[in-house]
Length: 366
Image (cartoon, rainbow, N blue to C red):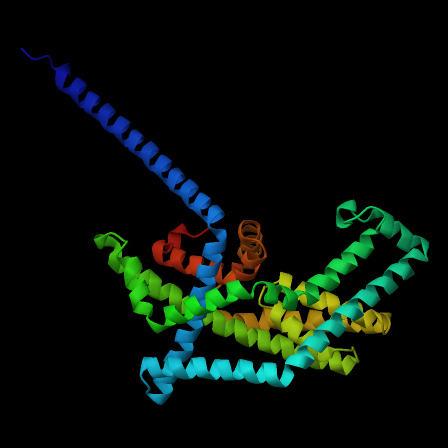
């Protein structure tokens, strides 16, 4: 005869086994997730240069494809002819720029470097001639000094002058990498479906529709980011150049171009573009330096509160904290190229996250 408590004991045993299996399943999922993250982090760390070139090529391909599709829509051309027209126009624009303004650009860059170095020497001399300045020199971190017996400000000023105007030199030093990225980007743009379909074949069949949607969404986000950032850079460059010319700062055109290029990097780029302009303005006087600082503050206020909201209506919205943290993260992993590419990388990742994560319900918001 079966005991009355037997069914209860059997149910309890089954429940315990089910709970144990669920617990083991959760532990297994967490371990699998951690292992995947470690593998991804190791791959990114070991293949950082390759990943940088690949993403740069992808970004260039997105630009070419976006411009080509505009011509397809406006002029009713085939995609191939539209891409040929875009490439020819870009090559012609670069050739005209180098032919007509190349010597002037190089001359202005060299003059800007010399002016910054001279201003750094003058600033250091002025600081050494008063007690407050000497205290500042003494308390600057010794890590800023590259050699013993050389003042920290001397080294810092040389670094500023070199980094602000060494973009041209570093570009020539990295010309091989840039050529590889441009050629790869051109091939990506010629047959985007070929490479996209190749990636989709690596995805499990059941997940391919979702992966395809994410790829299209990410491409649209990158194009929107590039278009918006290009407009933002143009506005900042024009306002900076005109404002500096009106104040009377020398090399206003070169400084305006530098401000536009630096603005490709949000927040940090604004400081990078303002420092050389303020240093050159100090050669005219403290009043001019204050005016330049105020000019850049107004421009950045306009860019952050007027331009950025308009741009973010058509592109992924990136909170400032996430943007700054992403610059720190990608800069640490990929170096200076990671700092430059941090914003488009973050825009792409946020687009993927928006596509993967379900939206919060009304009662789930904090």
